[in-house]
Amino acid sequence: MKTALFTLVFWFYWWVACPCLGQAPPPEKSPALLANYVKVSGGLNAYAGFYTANGIEARNQTAPFGLSGQVTISLPQGISIPITAVLGNQGASFSVRQPFNQFGISPTYKWLTVHGGYRNVTFSPFTLAGHTFLGGGVEANPGKLRLGAVYGKFNNAISGTLADANVLPSYGRRGYAVKLGYGKPGNYIDLTMLRAQDDSSSIASVPESATQTVKPAENLVVGLSSRLLIVKYFTVEIDAALSAYTRDLRAGTVDAEGRNPVVRLFGKLYTPRLSTQLTQAVQASVGYRDSWGSVKLQYKRIDPNFQTMGAYYFQSDIESYAIAPTVNLLQSKLRITGSYGVQFDNLANSRSVRTGRTIGSLLISYNPATKFGFDLQLSNYGISQQAGLRPVIDTLRLAQNNFSATANLRYTLQKEDVVQSFNLTTTYQQLSDLNQRTAAQTENKNLNVNLSYFYQQTTTGWGLTGMLTYTQTNLPVAATLGLPDSTGVGSSVNTGIVRFYGPTLGANQAFFGRKLTTSLTASYLVNQQMGVTGKVLTASLSGTYQVAKRQTLNATLYYLNTDTGIQAQRFNELRGNLGYGISF
Image (cartoon, rainbow, N blue to C red; front, side, top):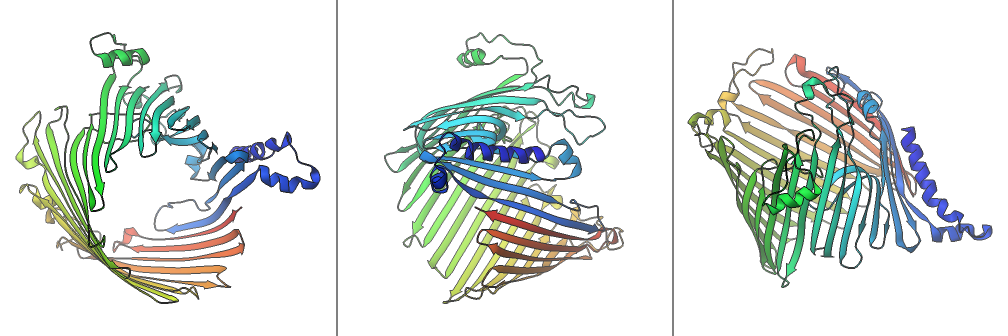
Protein backbone atom coordinates (compact mmCIF):
# COMPACT_ATOMS: atom_id res chain seq x y z
CA MET A 1 0.00 0.00 0.00
CA LYS A 2 2.87 2.38 0.84
CA THR A 3 4.40 1.74 -2.57
CA ALA A 4 1.17 2.56 -4.41
CA LEU A 5 0.64 5.71 -2.31
CA PHE A 6 4.21 6.82 -3.01
CA THR A 7 3.61 6.23 -6.74
CA LEU A 8 0.49 8.42 -6.66
CA VAL A 9 2.40 11.25 -4.93
CA PHE A 10 5.33 10.87 -7.33
CA TRP A 11 3.13 11.18 -10.43
CA PHE A 12 1.31 14.14 -8.92
CA TYR A 13 4.64 15.88 -8.31
CA TRP A 14 6.00 14.99 -11.73
CA TRP A 15 3.06 16.36 -13.73
CA VAL A 16 2.35 19.37 -11.53
CA ALA A 17 5.73 20.58 -10.29
CA CYS A 18 8.13 19.59 -13.05
CA PRO A 19 6.44 21.46 -15.97
CA CYS A 20 6.67 24.63 -13.89
CA LEU A 21 10.36 24.29 -13.03
CA GLY A 22 11.56 25.33 -16.45
CA GLN A 23 9.14 28.24 -16.80
CA ALA A 24 8.51 29.51 -13.28
CA PRO A 25 6.44 32.72 -13.18
CA PRO A 26 7.52 35.70 -11.11
CA PRO A 27 6.93 35.13 -7.38
CA GLU A 28 4.47 37.98 -7.03
CA LYS A 29 2.27 36.63 -9.83
CA SER A 30 2.84 32.90 -9.45
CA PRO A 31 -0.64 31.88 -8.18
CA ALA A 32 -2.48 33.46 -11.09
CA LEU A 33 -0.01 32.35 -13.71
CA LEU A 34 0.18 28.84 -12.27
CA ALA A 35 -3.59 28.51 -12.74
CA ASN A 36 -3.04 29.13 -16.45
CA TYR A 37 -0.44 26.36 -16.61
CA VAL A 38 -1.95 23.61 -14.48
CA LYS A 39 -5.47 22.77 -13.34
CA VAL A 40 -6.13 19.85 -11.02
CA SER A 41 -9.53 18.29 -10.38
CA GLY A 42 -10.77 15.05 -8.95
CA GLY A 43 -11.56 13.51 -5.60
CA LEU A 44 -10.41 11.24 -2.81
CA ASN A 45 -12.50 8.83 -0.75
CA ALA A 46 -11.54 6.96 2.41
CA TYR A 47 -13.56 4.54 4.50
CA ALA A 48 -13.23 2.34 7.58
CA GLY A 49 -15.75 0.05 9.19
CA PHE A 50 -16.52 -2.96 11.34
CA TYR A 51 -18.17 -6.34 10.82
CA THR A 52 -19.54 -9.01 13.17
CA ALA A 53 -21.41 -12.25 12.55
CA ASN A 54 -23.12 -14.88 14.70
CA GLY A 55 -24.17 -18.31 13.54
CA ILE A 56 -21.98 -18.41 10.43
CA GLU A 57 -18.34 -18.03 9.51
CA ALA A 58 -17.40 -14.38 8.94
CA ARG A 59 -17.86 -13.32 5.31
CA ASN A 60 -15.81 -10.14 5.60
CA GLN A 61 -12.94 -8.67 7.56
CA THR A 62 -13.71 -7.43 11.05
CA ALA A 63 -12.17 -4.02 10.26
CA PRO A 64 -12.32 -3.27 6.50
CA PHE A 65 -10.78 -0.05 5.20
CA GLY A 66 -9.82 1.49 1.90
CA LEU A 67 -8.71 4.56 -0.01
CA SER A 68 -9.53 5.51 -3.59
CA GLY A 69 -8.82 8.55 -5.65
CA GLN A 70 -9.19 10.03 -9.11
CA VAL A 71 -7.16 13.04 -10.19
CA THR A 72 -7.33 14.80 -13.56
CA ILE A 73 -4.45 17.15 -14.38
CA SER A 74 -5.16 19.63 -17.17
CA LEU A 75 -2.10 21.18 -18.79
CA PRO A 76 -1.88 23.93 -21.45
CA GLN A 77 -2.98 23.30 -25.04
CA GLY A 78 -5.76 20.95 -23.95
CA ILE A 79 -3.60 18.18 -22.44
CA SER A 80 -5.64 16.12 -19.96
CA ILE A 81 -4.09 13.50 -17.64
CA PRO A 82 -6.56 11.34 -15.65
CA ILE A 83 -5.01 9.34 -12.79
CA THR A 84 -6.83 6.71 -10.72
CA ALA A 85 -5.72 4.66 -7.72
CA VAL A 86 -7.43 2.15 -5.41
CA LEU A 87 -5.93 0.87 -2.15
CA GLY A 88 -7.52 -1.43 0.42
CA ASN A 89 -7.45 -4.62 2.40
CA GLN A 90 -9.34 -7.35 0.56
CA GLY A 91 -8.73 -10.18 2.98
CA ALA A 92 -5.50 -11.34 4.62
CA SER A 93 -4.69 -14.23 2.29
CA PHE A 94 -5.54 -12.23 -0.82
CA SER A 95 -3.69 -9.05 0.10
CA VAL A 96 -0.46 -10.91 0.90
CA ARG A 97 -0.44 -12.70 -2.45
CA GLN A 98 -1.89 -10.04 -4.76
CA PRO A 99 -3.06 -6.75 -3.17
CA PHE A 100 -5.71 -4.83 -5.04
CA ASN A 101 -3.50 -1.82 -5.73
CA GLN A 102 -3.66 -0.50 -9.30
CA PHE A 103 -2.48 2.73 -10.83
CA GLY A 104 -2.81 4.07 -14.36
CA ILE A 105 -3.02 7.25 -16.42
CA SER A 106 -4.37 8.11 -19.88
CA PRO A 107 -3.45 11.72 -20.75
CA THR A 108 -5.17 13.20 -23.80
CA TYR A 109 -4.05 16.05 -26.05
CA LYS A 110 -6.45 16.91 -28.88
CA TRP A 111 -6.46 13.77 -31.07
CA LEU A 112 -3.71 11.95 -29.12
CA THR A 113 -4.20 9.70 -26.06
CA VAL A 114 -1.33 8.02 -24.20
CA HIS A 115 -1.89 5.09 -21.81
CA GLY A 116 0.35 4.11 -18.92
CA GLY A 117 0.07 1.73 -15.97
CA TYR A 118 -2.92 -0.59 -15.49
CA ARG A 119 -5.22 0.05 -18.46
CA ASN A 120 -7.90 -1.74 -20.45
CA VAL A 121 -8.31 -0.78 -24.11
CA THR A 122 -10.64 -2.08 -26.80
CA PHE A 123 -9.67 -2.21 -30.47
CA SER A 124 -12.32 -4.72 -31.65
CA PRO A 125 -14.60 -7.39 -30.08
CA PHE A 126 -12.50 -10.35 -31.27
CA THR A 127 -8.92 -9.06 -30.83
CA LEU A 128 -8.15 -6.65 -28.00
CA ALA A 129 -11.44 -6.34 -26.11
CA GLY A 130 -10.99 -4.73 -22.71
CA HIS A 131 -8.37 -7.05 -21.20
CA THR A 132 -6.46 -5.34 -18.38
CA PHE A 133 -2.71 -5.02 -18.94
CA LEU A 134 0.19 -3.30 -17.20
CA GLY A 135 2.17 -1.31 -19.71
CA GLY A 136 1.81 1.54 -22.14
CA GLY A 137 0.10 2.50 -25.35
CA VAL A 138 -1.04 5.25 -27.64
CA GLU A 139 -4.19 6.03 -29.63
CA ALA A 140 -4.09 8.73 -32.33
CA ASN A 141 -6.91 10.01 -34.54
CA PRO A 142 -5.46 12.78 -36.72
CA GLY A 143 -8.17 13.67 -39.21
CA LYS A 144 -9.72 10.45 -40.41
CA LEU A 145 -6.78 8.23 -39.53
CA ARG A 146 -7.37 5.78 -36.67
CA LEU A 147 -4.12 4.51 -35.14
CA GLY A 148 -3.44 2.57 -31.97
CA ALA A 149 -0.78 0.45 -30.30
CA VAL A 150 -0.36 -1.03 -26.81
CA TYR A 151 2.26 -3.23 -25.14
CA GLY A 152 2.47 -4.71 -21.68
CA LYS A 153 1.99 -7.54 -19.23
CA PHE A 154 -1.35 -9.31 -19.70
CA ASN A 155 -0.94 -11.85 -16.92
CA ASN A 156 1.18 -12.18 -13.78
CA ALA A 157 3.19 -15.29 -13.08
CA ILE A 158 1.75 -17.28 -10.17
CA SER A 159 3.45 -20.41 -8.87
CA GLY A 160 0.93 -22.82 -7.41
CA THR A 161 1.64 -25.20 -4.57
CA LEU A 162 0.02 -28.45 -3.51
CA ALA A 163 -0.34 -26.98 -0.01
CA ASP A 164 -2.77 -24.33 -1.26
CA ALA A 165 -5.29 -25.77 -3.70
CA ASN A 166 -7.00 -22.39 -4.11
CA VAL A 167 -3.97 -20.93 -5.89
CA LEU A 168 -4.13 -21.70 -9.62
CA PRO A 169 -0.71 -21.46 -11.25
CA SER A 170 -0.32 -19.36 -14.40
CA TYR A 171 2.54 -18.23 -16.58
CA GLY A 172 3.56 -14.62 -16.97
CA ARG A 173 2.20 -13.26 -20.25
CA ARG A 174 3.21 -10.28 -22.37
CA GLY A 175 1.72 -9.02 -25.57
CA TYR A 176 1.06 -6.15 -27.92
CA ALA A 177 -1.75 -5.00 -30.18
CA VAL A 178 -1.90 -2.55 -33.09
CA LYS A 179 -4.73 -0.86 -34.97
CA LEU A 180 -4.80 0.88 -38.35
CA GLY A 181 -8.03 2.41 -39.60
CA TYR A 182 -9.71 5.15 -41.55
CA GLY A 183 -12.91 7.07 -40.92
CA LYS A 184 -14.85 8.70 -38.11
CA PRO A 185 -16.87 7.26 -35.19
CA GLY A 186 -19.89 5.50 -36.65
CA ASN A 187 -18.38 5.29 -40.15
CA TYR A 188 -14.97 3.60 -40.27
CA ILE A 189 -12.88 0.55 -41.21
CA ASP A 190 -10.20 -0.79 -38.82
CA LEU A 191 -7.56 -3.50 -39.18
CA THR A 192 -6.27 -4.88 -35.89
CA MET A 193 -3.69 -7.41 -34.75
CA LEU A 194 -2.83 -8.88 -31.34
CA ARG A 195 0.19 -10.99 -30.43
CA ALA A 196 0.68 -12.42 -26.93
CA GLN A 197 2.89 -15.15 -25.50
CA ASP A 198 3.46 -16.85 -22.15
CA ASP A 199 6.93 -16.92 -20.62
CA SER A 200 7.61 -20.62 -20.01
CA SER A 201 10.39 -19.72 -17.53
CA SER A 202 8.25 -17.39 -15.42
CA ILE A 203 7.17 -20.20 -13.07
CA ALA A 204 9.84 -22.03 -11.13
CA SER A 205 7.79 -25.18 -10.77
CA VAL A 206 4.28 -26.37 -11.59
CA PRO A 207 2.57 -28.94 -9.31
CA GLU A 208 2.13 -32.34 -10.90
CA SER A 209 -1.64 -32.10 -10.53
CA ALA A 210 -1.64 -28.95 -12.69
CA THR A 211 0.74 -30.01 -15.45
CA GLN A 212 -2.11 -31.32 -17.59
CA THR A 213 -4.03 -28.03 -17.53
CA VAL A 214 -1.40 -25.29 -17.14
CA LYS A 215 0.78 -24.98 -20.24
CA PRO A 216 2.59 -22.00 -21.80
CA ALA A 217 0.53 -20.68 -24.70
CA GLU A 218 0.83 -18.22 -27.58
CA ASN A 219 -1.72 -16.34 -29.66
CA LEU A 220 -1.83 -14.27 -32.85
CA VAL A 221 -5.12 -12.67 -33.92
CA VAL A 222 -5.82 -10.47 -36.94
CA GLY A 223 -9.19 -8.78 -37.28
CA LEU A 224 -11.38 -6.43 -39.27
CA SER A 225 -13.93 -4.10 -37.67
CA SER A 226 -16.18 -1.73 -39.60
CA ARG A 227 -19.23 0.50 -39.19
CA LEU A 228 -20.54 2.00 -42.43
CA LEU A 229 -23.39 4.41 -43.15
CA ILE A 230 -24.69 3.97 -46.68
CA VAL A 231 -27.14 6.31 -48.40
CA LYS A 232 -28.20 7.93 -45.11
CA TYR A 233 -30.64 5.19 -44.08
CA PHE A 234 -28.62 1.96 -44.35
CA THR A 235 -25.97 0.79 -41.89
CA VAL A 236 -23.54 -2.11 -42.22
CA GLU A 237 -21.61 -3.49 -39.26
CA ILE A 238 -19.01 -6.25 -39.33
CA ASP A 239 -16.47 -7.68 -36.89
CA ALA A 240 -14.29 -10.57 -38.02
CA ALA A 241 -11.11 -12.18 -36.77
CA LEU A 242 -8.76 -15.07 -37.49
CA SER A 243 -6.96 -16.55 -34.48
CA ALA A 244 -3.94 -18.84 -34.32
CA TYR A 245 -3.77 -20.21 -30.77
CA THR A 246 -0.96 -22.47 -29.60
CA ARG A 247 -1.96 -24.30 -26.43
CA ASP A 248 1.52 -25.63 -25.63
CA LEU A 249 4.70 -23.81 -26.71
CA ARG A 250 6.68 -26.96 -25.97
CA ALA A 251 5.03 -28.86 -28.83
CA GLY A 252 6.97 -29.51 -32.02
CA THR A 253 6.90 -27.06 -34.93
CA VAL A 254 4.99 -27.59 -38.16
CA ASP A 255 6.15 -26.68 -41.67
CA ALA A 256 4.05 -23.65 -42.71
CA GLU A 257 4.73 -24.12 -46.43
CA GLY A 258 1.76 -25.27 -48.44
CA ARG A 259 -0.99 -24.19 -50.70
CA ASN A 260 -3.10 -22.50 -48.05
CA PRO A 261 -2.31 -18.73 -48.29
CA VAL A 262 -3.62 -18.14 -44.76
CA VAL A 263 -1.19 -20.70 -43.34
CA ARG A 264 1.68 -19.16 -45.31
CA LEU A 265 0.79 -15.66 -44.03
CA PHE A 266 0.63 -16.78 -40.42
CA GLY A 267 3.89 -18.67 -40.88
CA LYS A 268 5.75 -15.39 -41.45
CA LEU A 269 4.44 -13.84 -38.21
CA TYR A 270 3.93 -16.90 -36.08
CA THR A 271 5.48 -20.32 -35.56
CA PRO A 272 2.84 -23.03 -36.10
CA ARG A 273 3.14 -26.01 -33.77
CA LEU A 274 1.42 -29.33 -33.30
CA SER A 275 -0.78 -27.72 -30.62
CA THR A 276 -1.73 -24.72 -32.81
CA GLN A 277 -5.36 -24.33 -33.83
CA LEU A 278 -6.61 -21.87 -36.46
CA THR A 279 -10.16 -20.59 -35.81
CA GLN A 280 -12.28 -17.66 -36.93
CA ALA A 281 -15.16 -15.53 -35.69
CA VAL A 282 -17.50 -13.13 -37.45
CA GLN A 283 -20.56 -11.08 -36.59
CA ALA A 284 -22.32 -8.85 -39.10
CA SER A 285 -25.53 -6.90 -39.48
CA VAL A 286 -27.38 -4.83 -42.06
CA GLY A 287 -29.87 -2.22 -40.84
CA TYR A 288 -32.35 0.29 -42.22
CA ARG A 289 -33.67 3.22 -40.16
CA ASP A 290 -36.36 5.78 -40.97
CA SER A 291 -38.91 7.91 -39.11
CA TRP A 292 -41.41 5.03 -38.91
CA GLY A 293 -38.88 2.69 -37.28
CA SER A 294 -36.07 0.36 -38.22
CA VAL A 295 -35.17 -3.21 -39.11
CA LYS A 296 -31.89 -5.06 -38.68
CA LEU A 297 -30.63 -8.43 -39.97
CA GLN A 298 -27.92 -10.06 -37.86
CA TYR A 299 -25.55 -12.99 -38.33
CA LYS A 300 -22.90 -14.49 -36.02
CA ARG A 301 -20.55 -17.43 -36.30
CA ILE A 302 -17.79 -18.30 -33.82
CA ASP A 303 -15.76 -21.45 -34.44
CA PRO A 304 -15.34 -24.08 -31.73
CA ASN A 305 -12.48 -23.21 -29.34
CA PHE A 306 -12.06 -19.69 -30.73
CA GLN A 307 -9.89 -17.73 -28.30
CA THR A 308 -8.05 -14.45 -28.06
CA MET A 309 -5.69 -13.43 -25.27
CA GLY A 310 -7.10 -9.91 -25.56
CA ALA A 311 -10.46 -10.84 -24.00
CA TYR A 312 -11.54 -12.78 -20.93
CA TYR A 313 -14.37 -14.94 -22.27
CA PHE A 314 -16.07 -15.95 -25.51
CA GLN A 315 -19.05 -18.16 -26.18
CA SER A 316 -17.70 -20.29 -29.01
CA ASP A 317 -19.11 -23.01 -31.25
CA ILE A 318 -22.26 -21.07 -32.22
CA GLU A 319 -23.94 -19.88 -35.38
CA SER A 320 -27.01 -17.64 -35.28
CA TYR A 321 -29.39 -15.67 -37.50
CA ALA A 322 -31.75 -12.95 -36.25
CA ILE A 323 -34.08 -10.17 -37.39
CA ALA A 324 -34.98 -7.20 -35.18
CA PRO A 325 -37.70 -4.76 -36.37
CA THR A 326 -38.96 -1.60 -34.58
CA VAL A 327 -42.16 0.34 -35.40
CA ASN A 328 -43.24 3.77 -34.08
CA LEU A 329 -46.96 4.60 -34.09
CA LEU A 330 -49.28 7.34 -32.81
CA GLN A 331 -46.62 10.03 -33.10
CA SER A 332 -44.10 7.78 -31.33
CA LYS A 333 -46.37 7.36 -28.28
CA LEU A 334 -46.63 3.67 -29.15
CA ARG A 335 -43.40 1.79 -29.80
CA ILE A 336 -43.24 -1.87 -30.82
CA THR A 337 -39.90 -3.67 -30.85
CA GLY A 338 -39.35 -7.32 -31.62
CA SER A 339 -36.72 -9.86 -32.53
CA TYR A 340 -36.59 -13.44 -33.71
CA GLY A 341 -33.56 -15.65 -34.19
CA VAL A 342 -32.22 -19.18 -34.36
CA GLN A 343 -28.92 -20.50 -33.01
CA PHE A 344 -27.00 -23.76 -33.46
CA ASP A 345 -23.85 -25.32 -32.06
CA ASN A 346 -21.71 -28.35 -32.98
CA LEU A 347 -20.38 -26.54 -36.05
CA ALA A 348 -17.56 -29.04 -36.50
CA ASN A 349 -19.91 -32.02 -35.99
CA SER A 350 -17.63 -33.25 -33.21
CA ARG A 351 -20.18 -33.48 -30.39
CA SER A 352 -22.54 -36.30 -29.63
CA VAL A 353 -25.59 -34.08 -30.26
CA ARG A 354 -26.41 -30.79 -31.96
CA THR A 355 -28.39 -28.25 -29.94
CA GLY A 356 -30.66 -25.72 -31.60
CA ARG A 357 -32.26 -22.66 -29.99
CA THR A 358 -35.01 -20.30 -31.07
CA ILE A 359 -35.24 -16.86 -29.47
CA GLY A 360 -38.16 -14.49 -29.87
CA SER A 361 -39.05 -11.30 -28.03
CA LEU A 362 -41.65 -8.52 -28.23
CA LEU A 363 -41.74 -5.20 -26.39
CA ILE A 364 -44.77 -2.90 -26.50
CA SER A 365 -44.38 0.49 -24.84
CA TYR A 366 -47.31 2.94 -24.66
CA ASN A 367 -46.79 6.42 -23.18
CA PRO A 368 -49.79 8.66 -24.01
CA ALA A 369 -48.83 11.24 -21.35
CA THR A 370 -45.95 12.00 -18.98
CA LYS A 371 -47.92 10.81 -15.93
CA PHE A 372 -49.04 7.46 -17.33
CA GLY A 373 -47.27 4.61 -19.09
CA PHE A 374 -47.59 0.91 -19.80
CA ASP A 375 -45.01 -1.66 -20.95
CA LEU A 376 -45.51 -5.26 -21.99
CA GLN A 377 -42.55 -7.51 -22.69
CA LEU A 378 -42.79 -11.08 -24.01
CA SER A 379 -39.99 -13.51 -24.73
CA ASN A 380 -39.92 -17.12 -25.86
CA TYR A 381 -36.79 -19.23 -25.76
CA GLY A 382 -36.80 -22.75 -27.18
CA ILE A 383 -34.08 -25.38 -27.21
CA SER A 384 -33.94 -28.79 -28.89
CA GLN A 385 -31.36 -31.41 -29.84
CA GLN A 386 -30.59 -33.39 -32.96
CA ALA A 387 -28.33 -36.37 -33.50
CA GLY A 388 -24.64 -35.58 -33.90
CA LEU A 389 -21.98 -38.25 -33.82
CA ARG A 390 -24.39 -40.49 -31.95
CA PRO A 391 -28.18 -40.91 -31.86
CA VAL A 392 -29.98 -39.02 -29.09
CA ILE A 393 -31.48 -41.27 -26.41
CA ASP A 394 -35.12 -40.36 -25.71
CA THR A 395 -34.62 -40.25 -21.95
CA LEU A 396 -31.76 -37.74 -22.39
CA ARG A 397 -33.12 -35.68 -25.28
CA LEU A 398 -33.24 -31.98 -24.44
CA ALA A 399 -36.36 -30.23 -25.72
CA GLN A 400 -37.58 -27.27 -23.67
CA ASN A 401 -39.46 -24.02 -24.05
CA ASN A 402 -39.04 -21.03 -21.72
CA PHE A 403 -41.79 -18.40 -21.85
CA SER A 404 -41.61 -15.09 -19.99
CA ALA A 405 -44.06 -12.16 -19.76
CA THR A 406 -43.63 -8.89 -17.87
CA ALA A 407 -46.22 -6.13 -17.53
CA ASN A 408 -45.47 -2.76 -15.95
CA LEU A 409 -48.02 -0.05 -15.14
CA ARG A 410 -46.89 3.32 -13.78
CA TYR A 411 -48.78 6.46 -12.74
CA THR A 412 -47.26 9.72 -11.48
CA LEU A 413 -48.85 12.69 -9.71
CA GLN A 414 -46.76 15.83 -9.53
CA LYS A 415 -47.63 19.11 -7.85
CA GLU A 416 -45.52 22.16 -7.11
CA ASP A 417 -43.63 20.63 -4.19
CA VAL A 418 -44.86 17.02 -3.99
CA VAL A 419 -44.20 14.05 -6.27
CA GLN A 420 -46.08 10.76 -5.93
CA SER A 421 -45.80 7.68 -8.10
CA PHE A 422 -47.38 4.23 -8.19
CA ASN A 423 -45.85 1.26 -9.94
CA LEU A 424 -47.23 -2.25 -10.48
CA THR A 425 -45.01 -4.90 -12.05
CA THR A 426 -45.99 -8.50 -12.74
CA THR A 427 -43.71 -11.18 -14.18
CA TYR A 428 -44.67 -14.71 -15.18
CA GLN A 429 -42.21 -17.38 -16.30
CA GLN A 430 -42.87 -20.95 -17.37
CA LEU A 431 -40.40 -23.65 -18.32
CA SER A 432 -42.08 -26.40 -20.35
CA ASP A 433 -40.26 -29.66 -21.01
CA LEU A 434 -41.33 -31.22 -24.30
CA ASN A 435 -39.70 -34.51 -23.33
CA GLN A 436 -42.33 -36.37 -21.29
CA ARG A 437 -39.66 -38.63 -19.79
CA THR A 438 -37.90 -35.71 -18.07
CA ALA A 439 -40.75 -33.19 -17.59
CA ALA A 440 -41.42 -34.27 -14.00
CA GLN A 441 -37.89 -33.25 -13.03
CA THR A 442 -37.63 -29.94 -14.90
CA GLU A 443 -40.96 -28.15 -15.47
CA ASN A 444 -41.61 -25.16 -13.24
CA LYS A 445 -43.59 -21.93 -13.07
CA ASN A 446 -42.78 -18.64 -11.42
CA LEU A 447 -44.98 -15.62 -10.60
CA ASN A 448 -43.71 -12.34 -9.17
CA VAL A 449 -45.80 -9.27 -8.27
CA ASN A 450 -44.41 -5.96 -6.96
CA LEU A 451 -46.53 -2.97 -5.91
CA SER A 452 -44.57 0.15 -4.95
CA TYR A 453 -45.38 3.68 -3.83
CA PHE A 454 -43.08 6.72 -3.77
CA TYR A 455 -43.70 10.05 -2.03
CA GLN A 456 -41.29 13.00 -1.97
CA GLN A 457 -41.55 16.62 -0.80
CA THR A 458 -39.13 18.64 -2.87
CA THR A 459 -38.95 21.60 -0.45
CA THR A 460 -38.56 19.88 2.94
CA GLY A 461 -36.57 16.83 1.78
CA TRP A 462 -39.05 14.44 3.41
CA GLY A 463 -39.78 11.25 1.53
CA LEU A 464 -41.44 7.86 1.97
CA THR A 465 -41.30 4.63 0.01
CA GLY A 466 -43.19 1.40 0.37
CA MET A 467 -43.29 -1.89 -1.50
CA LEU A 468 -45.17 -5.15 -1.28
CA THR A 469 -43.67 -8.16 -3.02
CA TYR A 470 -45.01 -11.65 -3.64
CA THR A 471 -43.24 -14.48 -5.41
CA GLN A 472 -44.54 -18.01 -5.98
CA THR A 473 -42.61 -20.80 -7.63
CA ASN A 474 -44.07 -24.15 -8.60
CA LEU A 475 -41.16 -26.59 -8.53
CA PRO A 476 -41.19 -30.00 -10.21
CA VAL A 477 -42.49 -32.54 -7.73
CA ALA A 478 -39.61 -34.95 -8.31
CA ALA A 479 -37.11 -32.22 -7.43
CA THR A 480 -38.66 -31.50 -4.02
CA LEU A 481 -38.34 -34.96 -2.50
CA GLY A 482 -36.14 -35.23 0.57
CA LEU A 483 -35.99 -31.54 1.47
CA PRO A 484 -35.57 -31.09 5.26
CA ASP A 485 -38.24 -29.74 7.56
CA SER A 486 -37.74 -27.59 10.65
CA THR A 487 -36.34 -30.56 12.58
CA GLY A 488 -33.70 -31.24 9.93
CA VAL A 489 -35.43 -34.49 8.87
CA GLY A 490 -36.88 -35.18 5.44
CA SER A 491 -40.18 -33.38 5.04
CA SER A 492 -43.41 -35.31 4.72
CA VAL A 493 -45.08 -32.28 3.13
CA ASN A 494 -44.37 -32.16 -0.59
CA THR A 495 -46.48 -29.51 -2.29
CA GLY A 496 -43.78 -28.31 -4.69
CA ILE A 497 -44.76 -24.66 -4.04
CA VAL A 498 -42.37 -22.04 -2.70
CA ARG A 499 -43.69 -18.64 -1.57
CA PHE A 500 -41.70 -15.51 -0.80
CA TYR A 501 -43.53 -12.37 0.33
CA GLY A 502 -43.35 -9.34 2.60
CA PRO A 503 -43.19 -5.56 2.90
CA THR A 504 -40.35 -3.07 2.52
CA LEU A 505 -40.57 0.41 4.02
CA GLY A 506 -38.21 3.35 3.72
CA ALA A 507 -38.02 6.99 4.73
CA ASN A 508 -35.62 9.84 4.06
CA GLN A 509 -35.28 13.29 5.61
CA ALA A 510 -32.96 16.27 5.14
CA PHE A 511 -31.81 18.51 8.01
CA PHE A 512 -29.85 21.71 8.54
CA GLY A 513 -30.69 23.24 5.20
CA ARG A 514 -30.10 19.92 3.40
CA LYS A 515 -26.54 19.65 4.70
CA LEU A 516 -27.50 16.39 6.38
CA THR A 517 -29.51 13.77 4.50
CA THR A 518 -30.62 10.59 6.22
CA SER A 519 -32.44 7.43 5.16
CA LEU A 520 -33.87 4.39 6.92
CA THR A 521 -34.96 1.20 5.19
CA ALA A 522 -36.34 -2.03 6.63
CA SER A 523 -37.80 -5.17 5.10
CA TYR A 524 -39.42 -8.30 6.51
CA LEU A 525 -39.73 -11.19 4.09
CA VAL A 526 -41.28 -14.60 4.71
CA ASN A 527 -40.28 -17.76 2.88
CA GLN A 528 -42.48 -20.88 2.88
CA GLN A 529 -41.20 -24.12 1.40
CA MET A 530 -42.07 -27.76 2.04
CA GLY A 531 -43.87 -26.98 5.29
CA VAL A 532 -40.94 -24.89 6.59
CA THR A 533 -41.37 -21.17 7.24
CA GLY A 534 -38.33 -18.93 7.18
CA LYS A 535 -37.95 -15.22 7.88
CA VAL A 536 -35.42 -12.61 6.78
CA LEU A 537 -35.18 -9.22 8.47
CA THR A 538 -32.95 -6.50 7.05
CA ALA A 539 -32.51 -2.92 8.21
CA SER A 540 -30.16 -0.15 7.12
CA LEU A 541 -29.53 3.37 8.35
CA SER A 542 -27.40 5.85 6.44
CA GLY A 543 -26.52 9.51 6.59
CA THR A 544 -24.44 11.99 4.61
CA TYR A 545 -23.27 15.34 5.97
CA GLN A 546 -21.88 18.17 3.85
CA VAL A 547 -18.93 19.32 5.97
CA ALA A 548 -17.84 21.97 3.46
CA LYS A 549 -18.57 22.84 -0.13
CA ARG A 550 -16.57 19.87 -1.45
CA GLN A 551 -16.23 17.66 1.61
CA THR A 552 -18.68 15.05 2.86
CA LEU A 553 -18.92 12.58 5.72
CA ASN A 554 -21.06 9.49 5.34
CA ALA A 555 -22.01 6.67 7.66
CA THR A 556 -23.99 3.46 7.16
CA LEU A 557 -25.24 0.73 9.48
CA TYR A 558 -26.62 -2.55 8.13
CA TYR A 559 -28.24 -5.46 10.01
CA LEU A 560 -29.28 -8.87 8.67
CA ASN A 561 -31.15 -11.58 10.59
CA THR A 562 -31.90 -14.83 8.78
CA ASP A 563 -34.05 -17.63 10.20
CA THR A 564 -34.55 -20.37 7.61
CA GLY A 565 -36.67 -22.45 9.97
CA ILE A 566 -33.78 -24.88 10.47
CA GLN A 567 -31.83 -24.45 13.69
CA ALA A 568 -28.45 -24.99 12.08
CA GLN A 569 -29.10 -22.29 9.47
CA ARG A 570 -29.91 -19.27 11.65
CA PHE A 571 -27.49 -16.35 11.71
CA ASN A 572 -27.23 -12.57 11.90
CA GLU A 573 -24.74 -9.99 10.69
CA LEU A 574 -24.00 -6.39 11.64
CA ARG A 575 -21.74 -4.12 9.68
CA GLY A 576 -20.98 -0.42 9.78
CA ASN A 577 -19.01 2.00 7.66
CA LEU A 578 -17.70 5.54 8.09
CA GLY A 579 -16.41 7.40 5.07
CA TYR A 580 -14.95 10.73 4.07
CA GLY A 581 -14.87 12.24 0.59
CA ILE A 582 -13.33 15.37 -0.85
CA SER A 583 -13.51 16.79 -4.36
CA PHE A 584 -11.36 19.50 -5.84
